[in-house]
Figure 1: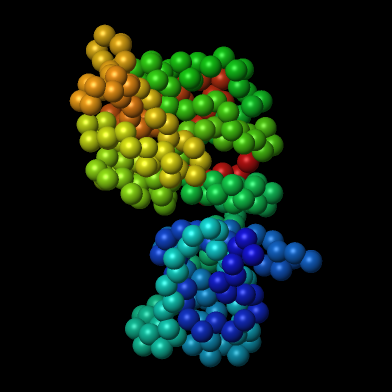
Figure 2: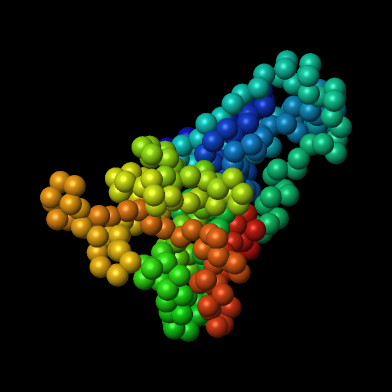
Length: 282
């Protein structure tokens, strides 16, 4: 199947599942299909409520999983045995400590259709996705020009992308919660900022190998020729190839520039925003 089942609704819970990396879908039976409740990311838990009720001896509770969890692509899950929970965790918590994962997070993505659409495209990974309201956007491209003027003539996003209900997710770095683009970079040039959490590229250590660009599942990293102070393309002279030197580039949320992303500030109609998909309601 496209989404392997990790634990199925109705099964007896035999341990707490904790998502270590990647994403998983939380769903319940609905008619002849499945209804998505929310998605789980790194640090989220599954099965805690059922196990805690069983430990308390709540005889009115059904000791079975209330929902199913399935893998969205790659996901790394840790299973904590019930004996460990009963010995070290449950005696030190109360009912108010149990997170209501199936309900609380679903409320921030109340429109099921929006959530299904976002999950199918793996947009839930984005913490700073660029969303354009097409009812407000006049196609003036002020956002693109502002981005280009801020980054030496190279715009770092494309005003195109998938559309749902007159909202477009543009091709711009989403600063993913789980950035696979960082895997394999030989110099560590692409990294997460300790101060802001944004995913950035260090131009001084980028060697133009394109590993990050090839790894990005959203095609939001591009290789561009480097230009000198005069604006001329810098050519490779080390091996006398004469080819332009290219480096990876992408949206960096205008790091180091006061006021936030230039694209957002330049839009005259407030059509453009940067959002975390957990907060997106459509």
